[in-house]
Length: 392
View 1 (tube, rainbow, N blue to C red):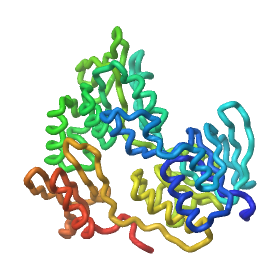
View 2 (view 1 turned 135 degrees about the vertical axis):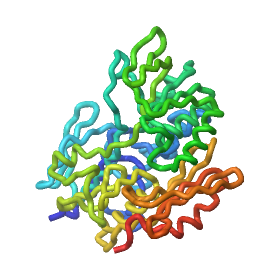
View 3 (view 1 turned 90 degrees about the vertical axis):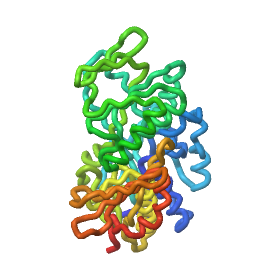
View 4 (view 1 turned 120 degrees about the horizontal axis):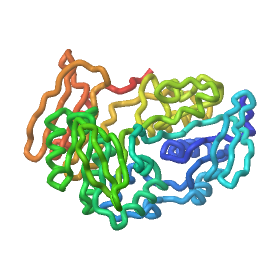
């Protein structure tokens, strides 16, 4: 049984954790909350990490509220730079270690796993493969910005959402960018071919060079530069290599505690795991097969879980939630059809825009991709889409 005198304990300090806290405090201003994070605990917009270089934003400038202010505003105890080593569900406590080596236990009434996700890495050969960068948090961004000083050429592995956003941002900031992807087009999981080609052309006009249908075989030192050898044998010189292959939910801590995991930490519509008083949300959570590492699903889940933690009835539903891709060279809004859907894309060329509509075999609209001026159709088309996760 839960001990109501113990705090709600939240592991993680990203958008999911802080949005949950904000929503919970609207319902209950007094119940103690303890937050544990490996990071500094400052609140910042993670989507800004892939769009801040052209504007010459430092990591400090991206922080909208420091941890001390968050603790004061929301009546929290925050343990920063602290790693959770173990979850003990039987005794409702977690064992943690701070970065100065101090170990201690924290008891909880309810535990929330808002662990986030890691950038996917693939094995590479070469004596500089360990120098391939990823940008997944504010500390990564600060390191990447520092290493960009005095550099000119960046190779990006992955032409998905993050890779294309970084390519646009870096090219706009005056860097020479080469983009590599195994697929034969940009944003292969989100865009129909004609819109992908339009994006490729717009980014090419900024100077971005494309290497599609290949991957990186090795990264090695070559004087002051890096030599990148592709799987087709092509050789590229670069100052930095950035990997942006997508996200893998952080599930190891949950697995070690016998919490059910699949792609993510498996939860029901109340965001409950299979273990009593343990919940999960955000990039690490999987709800009925859906892992949605985007802002709008996180907001929906946070509102639902706040209500549940406060002892009230609530059930998560996901309406259609289009995603804005931050590529100013060609603004994009996408609501991809569900994975495995059968049907076809219809493409409509507009003045300075393209509208891609995906209809299933029953001629029902189940997805869209909007480029340029077609993004103005977002609201009208979203109303026509089925919910991702309907109300129960």
